[in-house]
Amino acid sequence: MSTSDSNSLHHEPAGTDAGVSQQIRDISEVPAVEVITTGAVHLMSAAAVKVGLADDPEAEGLKDLDEARKLITALAGLVTAAAPEIGSQHAGPLRDGLRSLQLAFREASLIPDEPGKGPGEKFTGPVN
Image (cartoon, rainbow, N blue to C red; front, side, top):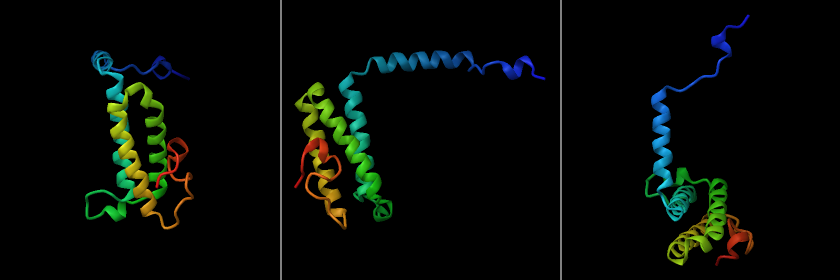
């Protein structure tokens, strides 16, 4: 036997709706270029840690090249796709950071990838 309480949908308190509405209004004011570059910087930071570039005595223990490969590839796809939309003044530094990560990945790898097969190189071309 079920009660009306067990069949009803769970609703958030009324104050939560106002908070969500405010968050939606806040994000609507952020330019797309800022959202894109912020996402790219988060990917870049995470990839740097996974490649072993963290400024931390435990950096080697944080290294995970499989995870770094995924993050760098995602970053390369985002930067490549977004570059025409965000302009060279924003895309240039992101490309530089991406290239640095790709080179750091190559240096950190015990068995280097073939040229053009490294993380993100299907989007950027071979990195040397």
